[in-house]
Image (cartoon, rainbow, N blue to C red):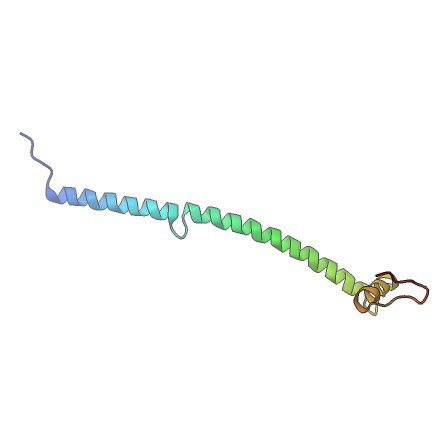
Amino acid sequence: MTKPPALGATVYFMILATLGLYFTFAAVQGDYGVFQQVQIRAQTEQLESERSRLQAQLDDIQNLTRRLSTQYLDLDLLDQQARDILGYTRPDEIVIR
């Protein structure tokens, strides 16, 4: 006749199994788990693409600002801005609305 395992051994293995499940769950879905890492990578890619888009916009604005500065004045750009923003026209032009 075999003797059933002692109660202490059963409790010990139950605690080990519980801790193993807890750490496995934390490794997969915790704050630094696998799913969180995938989400962080996706968010990083999205933010990098947005940064690239904003950098391109900033470069365009800096180019326009430089072209309208006192050191380098682009007369065509100045004429275009005056027409677009202030609504200026030349005396020899006909405006059709």
